[in-house]
Image 1 (cartoon, rainbow, N blue to C red):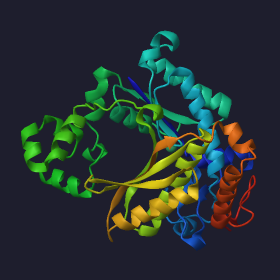
Image 2 (image 1 turned 120 degrees about the horizontal axis):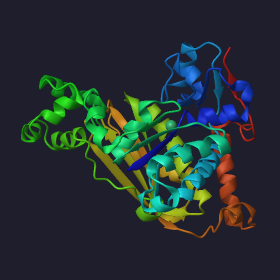
Image 3 (image 1 turned 90 degrees about the vertical axis):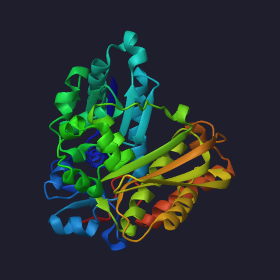
Amino acid sequence: MIIHVDMDAFYASVEEREDPSLRGRALIVAGRAESRGVVSAANYAARVFGIQSAMPTARAMRLCRGLIILPVRMALYAEVSRQVREIFHRFTPQVEPLSLDEAFLDTRASTRLHGPPELVARKIKQAIADELGLVASVGVAPNKFLAKLASDHDKPDGFTVISPDAVTSFLDPLPVRRLSGVGPATLSRLHALDIHTVRDVRLRDVDELQQRLGQTGLRLHELANGRDGRSVKSERESKSISHEKTFAAFVTEFDVLESVLMELTESVCERMRSIGLESRTVTLKLRDADFRTFTASRSLQAPTCSTRRVWTHVRTLLRARYRRGMAVRLVGVGVSRFEAPAGTQVELFNSRDDRRDAKIDELTDHIRSRYGADAIGRGTRFHRGE
Ligand SMILES: [Mg+2]
């Protein structure tokens, strides 16, 4: 059994925890409307108004009067994310983060020590609540695909176990679009074949699906039968750090992609700095509405963990890859080919080393350039709605 942990409205929940007077009020963590920023996270009170992540901030403001808008404090979220990960690592080294707020865990090798995955998942959810004051939705299921569906099933504050003998009954009634990789184009082809639910896919002849839909048909048939052979890969094993974001609705605007990628770049670089690594390769990942995945990489002359430097390469890659009108389903940023000159985190921040100080300056510059001179510091707000 695989565990998927997904923090509920993560950035927004961290902000609420930092300032309890915000609790229960509609708030978003977002880029500025004036600079075409987008929503990074919305709390549940804001979601009631139809506000979603990756929506332009200006639009979110129109949807909700009195919306509280907070700047993205990536260093804070990265620190809390590190604390969440520290909880995971008490139970297993097999942790595969997908972003700052989401990870797969495989705890099967430590069952004797910590108990079966269902119990470990409970303990993790409880520890996150008790020690960090945050809520996670947790899914436990036979593989990654199902575990992710499970964590999403009863969100927020969900805890869903799909046991092996319940896989079919869980999957069958779901609309077919819940199978990962079914975008509008594939969906209309499936509908044309009179396929509407996961059950319809499962019962279809696999050869027919392949004939009609190619590789996608094969893949959907596997998923509909609850099969997913991917294993959980820790950062150490995969020798890379990558964060990605799947959009609830397809994104076609270049500006929005740029904002989201900038945020992913920040989160990946924060992660690198927190474990004292620098990378020599930067990778961009885009997935379109038809589940075609494009990746492109650049090699750097010198290793870096600087957000600004990595961002320069991500932006160049995006400009080369993006086609007008492209409907994007997922974006990701990865770094790899690590070197570890920076030592531990403590050294990183205490060292008198000029080069490292320069890096911190650079990061500070970056934050200032993005949010204004007073953006650094606790509880700063650059805007409040009426
Ligand atoms: Mg989440």
